[in-house]
Length: 592
Image 1: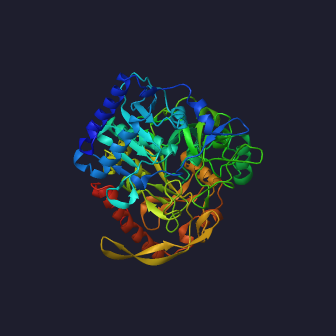
Image 2: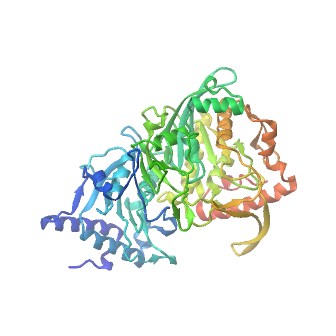
Image 3: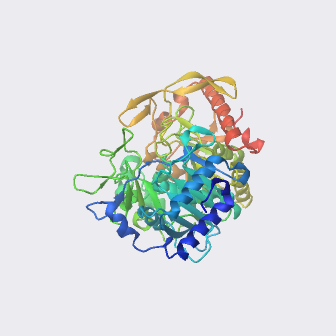
């Protein structure tokens, strides 16, 4: 009997899948290719073989399908559109032997180890192969904690239930532990599908799953004492999370810092190790890494970003949408490929952490977290760097997730200010943002009570300090508000804000190291007071440069107050949408 749409429920989909597999096998037809060992060899038939012996593949979509994703928490939320796509997936699965690939997120000793099982269309063996390379092994005989059905082909997809103008491509079922992805061969869909389940899983294990990198290093304080730093670094794709979460030093980099900043880093900073660069489990007593490798954005990377560059140029790297140079080697200059008429801005590579030159063999931290860095790029009110000196205020910055749009996130809103709560909105499901935020705040309080407070900082990376803007009328919840609009100019690389300046990666590294040492001098923020501290002296950064990175150099106090009030209104508007139920003390923490 044929499968009909009225048979489709969230639970019954899995039953129907298992029934299809059993009936094919009973007829002597191969239904599943269980963790085949020749995926790489198969994928080479349509891959790009670079001169350095690494391999690369191209995807049909060059960014995640966040706007084409639906999260369904219960049977009551299931619509006919969902059922139609779920039926098409089952119809597709009947006709081919799906590849089964097993792996786990989290180390065997992690409090958040989660067994993942991928069923992938057999025409795309590169997808399961590359995904398994960044995860930990898992026994196929074990029961999976999360399952993904991955069909890169277009299936005559129905429209999104709430937006007929968009195709429904991805359906996540957090409370039933599976996801369906279609119509995209972008590896990020597989990676983030499982990580979205893992973020929820971390919360259920007593922590909170966060879209952040983790790095450890030792600093020598101005008094001569040593301090081990376990640093989380939050940010959306394209904001600089990997740049700072995977920053590696060698002698050439040390010499650059001596020459440009007058700092002999090896005397005050050492034992710098990468832990993870994308999603971590943030627990009271440790930070849990999710993956054993990295899938990192590489366009624009050069020798100065030693860790990423060395690993990406290895013959073991596995590339996606990556160009070649005149010698046939991988190139990250974004000069050859284009997507939708624009230069390539989302080349990606699977990297081995051990090839970064800064990996000690473990993705889990050696101690509790004691430094949190929020990458919140902006153009109008932002300093280059701030210290968030109030727990509710720090949690509010995380709740806002204010950032700048990048093509790796979506083709819409590139360069514009956007809000993505916890920098994790597309990957949060099953557990609300408010619940994650309250857990994060609870961990801050517990570390403070233990006498080991977590120092929290906000940095501006891809934004600018003092950019040009104009006022515009925006309607929010039926009311008109005056809101600033950044002025952009079109360039060959996309829209760029007019005016202003921004810190270099190296300047921000100087700040982070000196802040971790306790060597930065601070003063209260002119408007927020002691809740937020402003750097007035950073060893290695000149007083003139600090003035250039101070928005009050470009704006009056009255102008900054007006801009910040507009920012607070907009932040609360998105809080209402993205994290309902947030504690009022967090919600109002920025008020003045």
